[in-house]
Image 1 (cartoon, rainbow, N blue to C red):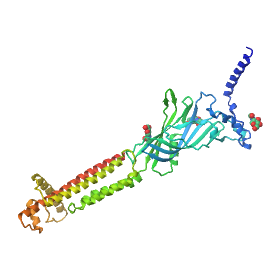
Image 2 (cartoon, rainbow, N blue to C red):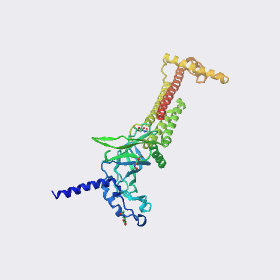
Image 3 (cartoon, helix red, strand yellow):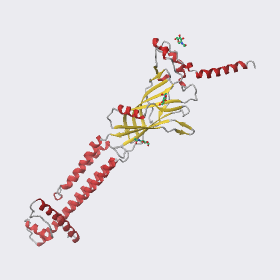
Image 4 (cartoon, helix red, strand yellow):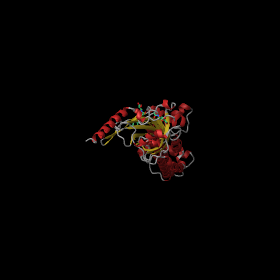
Length: 443
Ligand SMILES: *[C@@H]1O[C@H](CO)[C@@H](O)[C@H](O)[C@H]1NC(C)=O
Ligand SMILES: *[C@@H]1O[C@H](CO)[C@@H](O)[C@H](O)[C@H]1NC(C)=O
Ligand SMILES: *[C@@H]1O[C@H](CO)[C@@H](O)[C@H](O)[C@H]1NC(C)=O
């Protein structure tokens, strides 16, 4: 019994003393005498360094508040195929180490010192989207002030997963998230906060991102949802980083040449169909376009179906269709000049109707613009066509030849009208589909 009392007493005394000392921050005061004369004394800090393994709070029930700030200094790569964003950031962490404090008056007004970060407890803040090992330099320093406030800054090359949508390539915007959270500590042990306002971080980042690379930083927004895993709740800060692609390279290398080629293809309808030059010309154009697509394939995103692929496919099919039309027309002209079949009556009257309408239009135009041309054909008929052929000097030796010539003539006329009609359909289809794509890109 007698031996028990001193033990119990000592334990009680220790508890009371401990409680008293907890309120008294002096117990963790570093003796900084002579720092300004002899430099820092490692022995004075030894007690702090020894406690490195523990969260620096006096009462373990008290959460540590870690304030975060970061600046994006470069957007290095955006890989749509594996959905990764590689960026470079400067992460700043601020927290209070309750084991450190000293009186600046005792040591010539020294208010802050730098300490090798490896000797201090560091918060285990990580980025949830991180898809790589953290390769930060190991010998970093931290600023420690006389009240125990610590400022720790580290550079990070962040390869983070990001949901990329390349449909609007090359006019796309991406919205990537960077979620900062503690690896281990729940809300009972660690709370996260922001050191600066988000707009200040955005401004700093926009100043820092000096690279005139492909990507431009638009905006950073934040959200602070808590993450519940089982029964534990983790604090986290989510940053939404909005970036936009600079499309100039792709406009110059992809869209403009493609536009030129399709314009030439449209203009090649003005080559005379009878000369037979049109089909070879279009064939060459198509070949050129295929080579262009092969060469520029590297510039396109490797995965997904962006709108630009639809645009290329559309241009290619327009060229193929116009080549087919040229081939068909050459075939038709060839056929009708050799063996013209009799023209169906409805087709003939339709053709006459059309020709009359256009010719009268032309007449009206001529009347308005100058003296009428006597050789204007207003209403061609079978007889007239034959007559003209005769006047032109191809004197038909027999009536059958004359009839043949008439047939050929009316068929050639029909072919040319058909050509104009198909050209109009082609133009309407081309302009409507290209405007649709451009309007989609505008959004
Ligand atoms: C601080 O350390 C110096 C010697 O380095 C010693 O003289 C002084 O008494 C110490 N002060 C306190 C408050 O312990
Ligand atoms: C963190 O930020 C809050 C509010 O901005 C501030 O009250 C607190 O002192 C900061 N904590 C640290 C350790 O800097
Ligand atoms: C990015 O996405 C988040 C949520 O999906 C949204 O709150 C935020 O406004 C988006 N940012 C931009 C710039 O679109």
